Length: 280
Ligand SMILES: Nc1ncnc2c1ncn2[C@@H]1O[C@H](COP(=O)(O)OP(=O)(O)OP(=O)(O)O)[C@@H](O)[C@H]1O
Ligand SMILES: Cc1ncsc1CCO
Ligand SMILES: [Mg+2]
Image 1 (tube, rainbow, N blue to C red):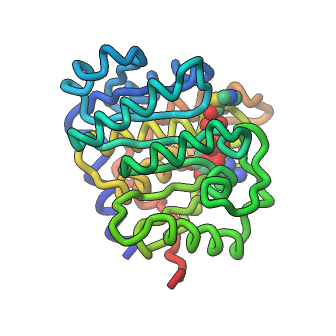
Image 2: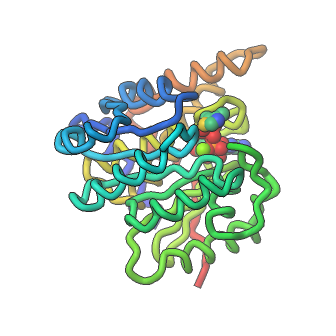
Image 3: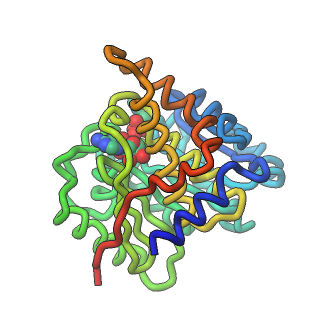
C-alpha cells in the first residue's frame, strides 16, 4: 500500500502547474513560507484583510490558515476566510500552532474544524491538545514525551473519533515520526532528521507544501504524505551534504535549498519510509 504513495510522490513533484496559495499566517515565518512555496514552483499570496477575501478566493487554488501569531481580531479574520472557502469548496489547511498554550487558540481551532478543512495539522502535542488528550506541548513546540507507539495509537484513535463518519478531514501530527489519520486509516511516516526541530517554521513550511499540493488537486491524505516526506527528505539530503562543523543556520539554509533541488533527482521518492498502524 505504501507503493501507492511512492507513485503519488513521483507524479506530484515537480509540479506540473503552479498553484496560487492564499496564506493567512504568522509574522514569525511568513517570509520563509512564501519563499518555500516559490522554491517548489508554487506561488504565495499573503492577504489578511477581510474585504479582500472574496477577490483573493476567486483567483487562488487553496487556502492556508495558521494560528501561530494571532493579532487583534484574529477571530474575525480566520473564521470568515474559512467559512468563505468552505462555501466555495476551496481546499483548506488549518495549522493549529500553539493550541496547547491558550484557550483562545483551542476554541478557534475547534471552530475552524467545523468548516471541514481538507487537512488539519500541528505537531504531535498540538494534535493531542486538540483531541483533549494530555499534552506536553510547550508554546509552539511539541514534546518527545508525546511520541512513542502507545501515544501514537492513542492519538490515532482519538482523531478517528473526532472525525466522525461524515468527515473528510485528514489529520497530520508531526514530530520525530509523523502520524497521518484519515477515516480509520493511520499511517506513520519515518523520514527526517533531529535537526529539523532546531529551527523555527519547519511545521509551517510543511503546511505550506501541503496546501500547494491540495491546490493542484491532491486529496488531503495524498498531499499530507507527499509534503511531509518531501520536506523530511530535504532535511536528510541537507545533512548528508554538509561537512561538520556547521551551525543550525547553515543546516536551515541547506534544507530550504533542497526544496528546489531534491525533486530534480529522478528517484527521490524511493526514500519514503513509513508503515500503517492498526486502530480498529
Ligand atoms: N526529531 C525529528 N526527527 C525527524 N524529523 C523531525 C524531527 N522533528 C521534526 N521533524 C520533522 O520536521 C517537520 C516539522 O515538524 P515539527 O513537529 O517540528 O513541527 P512544528 O513543531 O509545527 O514546527 P514549527 O512550530 O517550528 O513550525 C516535520 O516534517 C517532522 O517530521
Ligand atoms: C515561534 C513562533 N511563535 C508563534 S508562531 C511561531 C513560529 C512557529 O510556528
Ligand atoms: Mg507548527
